[in-house]
Image (cartoon, rainbow, N blue to C red; front, side, top):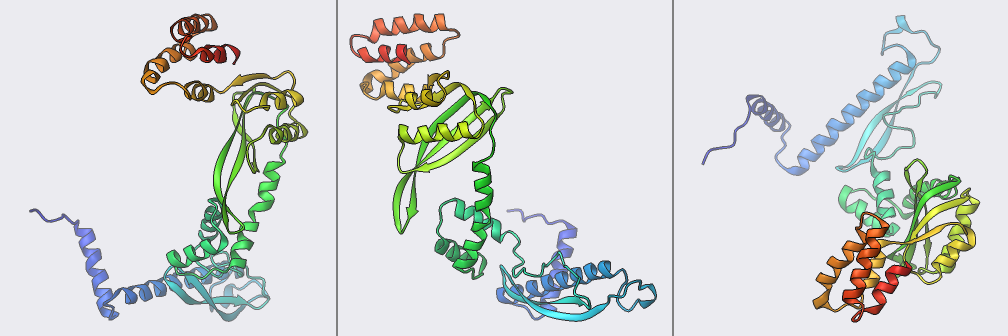
Amino acid sequence: MAGRKISPERREQRKKLLEMLQSAGINDVEGVQDLFKEMVSTVLENGLEAELEDELGYSKYDYRNKNTDNSRNGYSEKTMKSSFGEMDIAVPRDRKGEFEPQLIKKQQTTISGDIEEKILSMYAKGMTTSDIESHIREIYGIDVSDSTISRVTDKILPVVREWQSRPLENIYAVVFMDAIHFHVRSEGQIVKKAVYLAIGINMDGIKDVLGMWIGENESAKFWLSVMNGMRNRGVEDILIACVDGLTGFTSAIEAVFPKTEIQQCIIHQIRNTTRFVSYKDIKVLMADLKKIYAAIDEQTAVYELDAFDEKWGAKYPKIAISWRTN
């Protein structure tokens, strides 16, 4: 069996790495982690020194090129949390206290710059603050308190409220409306919630999520409040509303947008059509239904619907009626 080929450059890199580990007396994973922390802290400290040098305009001990009344003022020790544990770094200071480091900001306590993004991502997926705390500790080895997580997640609330209340366009060509049901944790229990979703296509053909609203379960009454909210945000008319067969949904839309044409969502229409069809008939019946909803024009669709009714009307009389009315 042929051995794995390694390039001369990579072989040389491995040799140097091995020599470095041997010279440092490192022979286990813990030692490698300590070495990694030392390397990272050195890089951070050098970067902070460079930032201060750029801020002051002269390098250390180069007083001849000094053109400021500010100067270096020693260091302050700072403990940073990382995925390999805590590390101490020396942060340079200036005498006037005007230095604002960007590599490690003044209030920053972790070098894992994506920690907050990870917290927000897990929060968006429905994890509780205690779940997030445990997850961060397990994956990154960093203790993050509930209060810290709550502070981070609270950052997105103003953004969410601004997005929810943003102005909308006055006319939409098509708006798709439906509810998705999720199981979420609420007050220590798993409950089912309905997320009302409206997706609009404007007159330029651009698709946009108009809003998402959370309710206990899907109802026409809640959809009516959604319609009123959309009107208050600037929507004057919707040409076509594509919805499912929820009782009262059509009336809720017509109460706010009376000129809107209601179109049954084809997926819901098919699903409702085939709900009570015998399993042995479903394959052939679906092939005949496809001739209707895939027809190239209305005249062809009506012809195929008549043919469908003639074939299946005696056994499933309500199907053709449903397709004619919707």
